[in-house]
Image 1 (cartoon, rainbow, N blue to C red):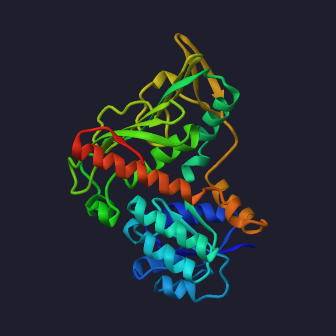
Image 2: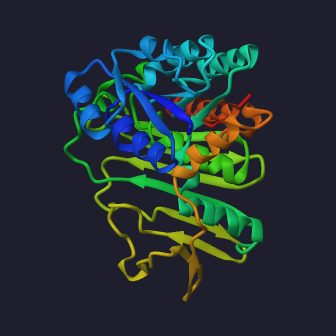
Image 3: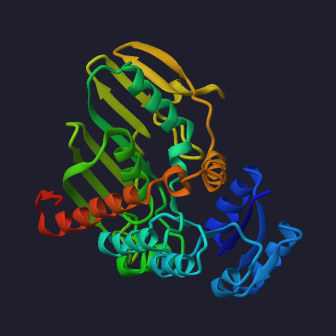
Length: 338
């Protein structure tokens, strides 16, 4: 069985990574946390898993096949570098770093030392994403010209977490949180981004909590990517427009439904819509644990880095788009990526 060490047992480590690692059949041999309450949660929820005080102690272990970093975003570059220098294959939660330059430095170091690195873009394995990818490959929508992807919430009373209160330099804000998913999905589906226009604001928290990004892909598709904590009337989760029809997905986890008449069956992922004609779309079989299944397979491949589920170069490009979005909002102009 493949063995992992998990750095961090907060909302991401405990609520996302640990369950997915277990679902993928990975043995979590150790978790690092300096918080006594979280250490107690580890011992109660992961029997047999040892608790270490910090990442340094995790990296000193000799029973670990790879490390998962679920630490605050502002520490990712430093922590990934420590794993690389220790020769440990590493999965880092998104974002890889807080900006493009920092991320590029980390990826360059991974290549120099030859240690596998990948970025946890779990949303690539959501049925909505894999289903849309299938429709695009089949040409069902014809020539696609617009991609809309929203992550809109009604949260007028903000949560009091580091994400809501930290500066962008320390990894806070919605651009480095939800938009890393939105931008990654758009790039994965429609290719690199050439130009960006954005509106960004901090309305209810010290960190950015409202951002809308227009990303023009080299392929000609334009993505409209919106995330906000103050949407009393959220828009549809996904809407993709093509010359032969539209793909529409409304239902998403516990978010509000925009089209209650378009509820989904368990084996469905969205609708193919042509005016009044509405056809349910069968979900492509996938789940987020497939990310870690792919990591396990990659570690046993002849070229582990090439086989990893997410190329870290993609994460560098995502951060280039986010950097451009922040600059665009500040200067009120379209930014062309270099």
